[in-house]
Length: 373
Image 1 (cartoon, helix red, strand yellow):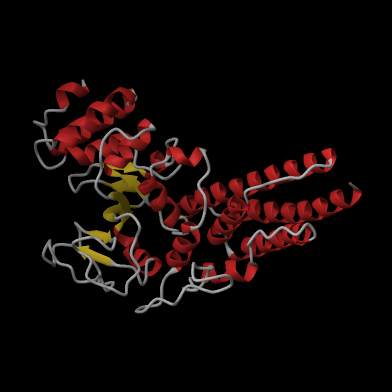
Image 2 (cartoon, one colour):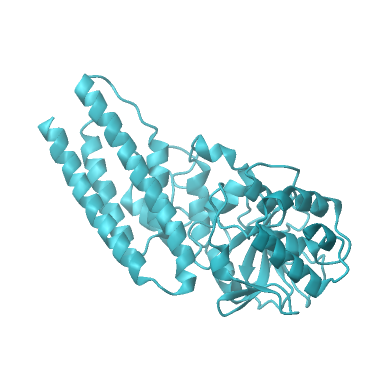
């Protein structure tokens, strides 16, 4: 028991250093853009600490009872990699030390956790061969043809082999995929559209097409670099709506959106690009200082009102913003009406008031106005 305490104390010391560096880094990041990355970092750090506490408790109990023990090391590996991916360099270094300390202890028990610091560093760097593939033990995935893949390629492959927790199973697969894929993407982004309505309701209420993600116009280059090597098609006023030419990173004018394609998408034409498991698209929005500009008529919302998250745990456009976008463009479509009726009961008085004023500014005769009071 003394040896166990000594080893766990060593690991705990490395963990303490990690937490100290994390808190120091978080407290010094005050720029608004970094707040959103900080939120994703904290989620990853919390999951790592939770996994650490879980297996320490299991090990201690088994040691006290002189019994065998079992733990799902896929969860530990995923938590360690996710935290390392979103962490700044100094924190990622301490996370690697933390993983090493745990690995040293577990090596004495013959447990293989499949957590390799060099591999984590390759994944952070976006190496196409960052993770072990399905070609055989110890072999890497073959490199992708075309442009050098961005960070999301390595993360996508790593997540493909990870197991989802029981709590995470409440999040629909398509939404969980996009959430995890964008884990290391720094600029702010928000789930929007019909999936965002369901996120606020905590359940899927209807069928959906692709997943919509709101991002900012100024961050389009960051999107291109993060998803370098992926099958991307972008539409803006300068090209036809049915264009299938891969996006080469050219600057897009508003209104614009960027498709991240699956192999079966009618827009997919590249055999060498990396394709998504679930199709989603970025809808580019304007930002004015600390406000999200929703319409050129002057409708805007403070970004700090977008900090609250639904139970699904990912950045999500507030319900009043979701409904505002659904109100634009004339008569509501059946699915927009369904989302409106589903979200209306959960809107606060302030949210109703904001939505009513915003819709009235853009479309004074909209049929939803009477029901917003």
